[in-house]
Length: 168
Image 1 (cartoon, rainbow, N blue to C red):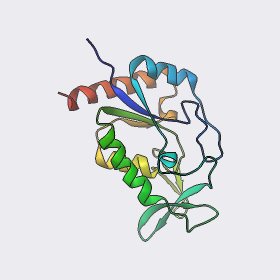
Image 2 (cartoon, rainbow, N blue to C red):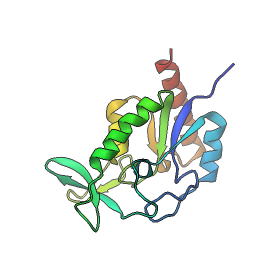
Image 3 (cartoon, rainbow, N blue to C red):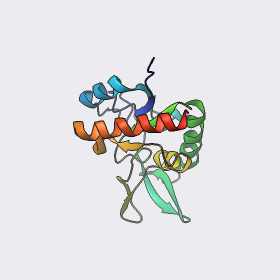
Image 4 (cartoon, one colour):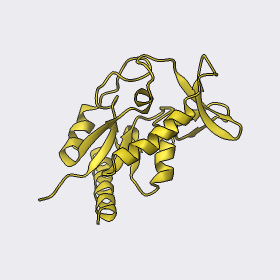
């Protein structure tokens, strides 16, 4: 019996209205392709740490030589520690996850696409960065990285290879 590997996918990409503005960014073609190959674990770090929908937007800034997620309108709102802790808890609770597809430009989930405003460059969202730090070989992409069928197939192969290597 060939069991499907597990991947985590941002809930907004699955069509759930969990974004800061109460919207979603559904990608039915991508999700359909992923569901053929994988068991899907839903994830939205900001909701999982208890933030509301809708919620005040946060952005990444550098403060005290660290990237932090703080409120756009209220710089005293700082969710950095909660998101980092959630990433660790997520991996512990989901040991079979062998890859992630996350939302681009998100302060939590962006992979090389999230603006870091104080430095004027693009970086990783906090959740994505912490996952990459804890599991550096695990395939981790944004939906923008797997926009074509060829890119999806390449991602599928990377996840399957990762799953075999870590579960054998």
